[in-house]
Image (tube, rainbow, N blue to C red; front, side):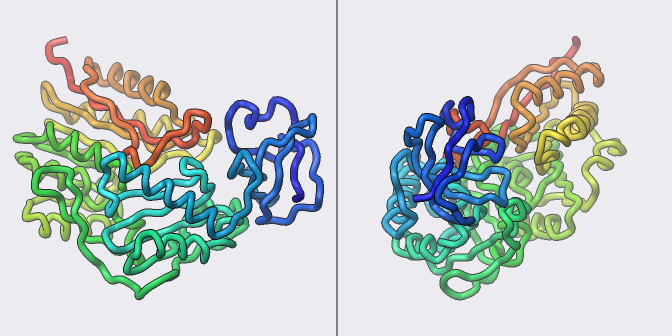
Length: 390
């Protein structure tokens, strides 16, 4: 088997599973893009097996600490282990992320299940080349009505792959309804897996929807960057006095309104740039929710991203009532919990508000975190209440 000799002090010696181009001492055996290769240290001791792509900055991603082929048995075993983990965690396996890349030892493979339908992504070259085998393993384990390959991520360009959305199994599904148990009685969402914005439902935030809904009864709620209304719908069903949802995407606002009708609730859904809405809004709210898309995909843009977070935090705090609550979320790995908290504190100082932290949130258990691979932990959220008379 061809492979790589890794330089001393590379991150793989500290538990990580990635090898960057700068960490390679030597290639041997003429590996080709998409190959399975062996990894060795500078003393010729084995470090395991990896998938290889010299087109990527991450040249090798370890798949096992032993010798391993990408065959049908491998995918059946790894996918089965990932699904078993979700079932043991108590998460509804019919509305969950069933496979999540390195966290399930399948680098680049993402599998989401929405009822009888499955969406998969293959974001690394080796896994893309084995997409048919992955789909077969999913079909055997889950017996779904359809399997869709939704490779529409910008991450694909780093692997030298083109974006595509195609059917892997079954007939093309039209829009259909799923129900999330985020509040009593559940919340219904219309899902369009092929033509919708993303898949329409951020599975990693379902627990946060539940927790925020517990605070919403009788409150005037503002949900900024609402997407298809996850937080807004949960708050409305929990008995909020009023709910305003803001997003710059027309399709997202249309979906929010359809979902509100499905659930028999009223939401004031507004197509507007959330930054501008927060800046010019003259209304007062008891609960402001800020759940923007990632402001940064890399370290280079982190400074500008933190300016963006500071802006929405400052404006959100200024819209709050006397003892109002702000829930704010960040889905960028590069903005750490500590940096994000510092940003919120800085905004509170400028807004002349004293805050009490009343909750913190992370990604749901179907998005497992590996402590040796910090990139697997990306979502962080904090809930603060204004302390009056200070």
